[in-house]
Image (cartoon, rainbow, N blue to C red; front, side):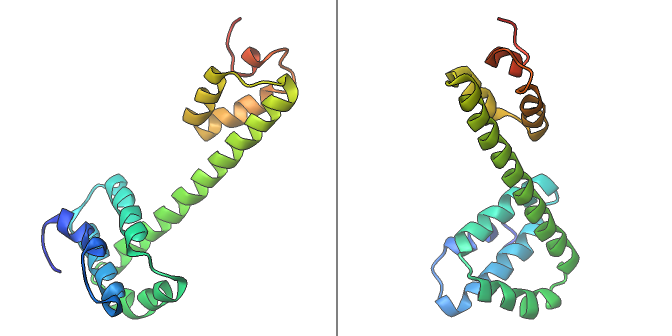
Length: 150
């Protein structure tokens, strides 16, 4: 469980182990992540992987934070990573909400949303979605919302 192979550490939650050890396995995977990967973007990505496959419930998370995290030599890094995951989740939630709102408004205003517009919405950053939502009030057609020429 203390492998220096990052793939092995990240996959700990996928391996066979007694259920009473799931929090310990989760803790070892998180320790391995912050100890073996220095790129914050990869840490964020891999942290989500660990969280997804560990399948801890709320009580397990509380126990991890109270019993395991205070003993960690990487406590600050893990807490910072946890904060990054929360912020990323909030950003993604705002982005998804903005996309859904704009899609609904486009349909109400123009009665149809072309495939090209749906594709733009799926790939858009939050700032683009907000800009397009602002334009919907004055646009004569859907192309104007997206700043496209007819």
